[in-house]
Amino acid sequence: MSSWRRDFASGLVVLTPILVILFVLNYLYSQIVDLPVIRRLAEPFGFFVAVLVFVMLVLSVGYLMRTTVGRLFETYLDAAMNRVPLIRVLYNASKLAVETAVSGTDDLQKPVKIEPWDGMRMTAFKTGKITEDGRVVLFMPTAPNITTGFVMEVDPDDIVETDETVEEALTRVLSAGFGDEERPSPIDIDTRSED
Image (cartoon, rainbow, N blue to C red; front, side):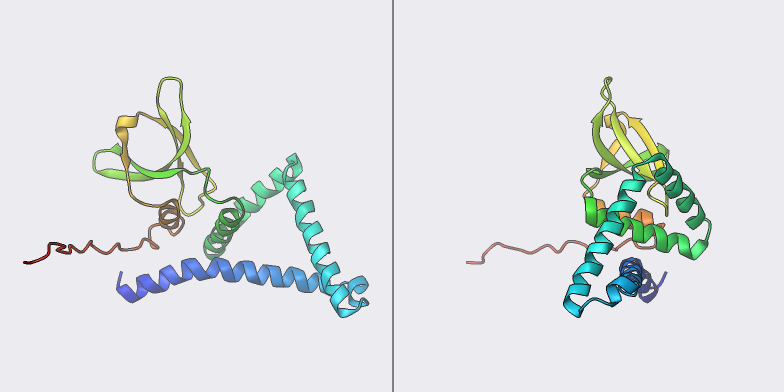
């Protein structure tokens, strides 16, 4: 892939989720502001009531997601969104962006590589858990839907440590390998002074 195409794809990976989130927030806010009750209120008061209604709506949906009905709804929504090619990427990128912004990436402690077959490496993440027999518990997300994946118990000797950050590894998995950045090679600087 040429350099400009890679830059364009990387830019889309970063900007598209942000634009989708802003579009959805703008749409929800405009729908709330257009409610007859809020439209009749004076301007500064109406704004605060609209924000309060929006926060209550988000909390209500969040509470619903803790129930069985909410989890089933989310499962069916994920399945439906993941069937449409372009929507799948936008949906998963937006979902990852919100989850990362809200909860951070603390649950995924460190990206590592494993080699299930000779010559093939896969990206996985340490979860911070260790089994009773000393194996490290890893989560290996699937691309491009990183909300699904495999939980594996791996012998510590079979894990290859990397110097990647969680965000770099997640970007690669989420973009199905297209958003991988080329790291510049280190520059050697001679620090010896000449006398």
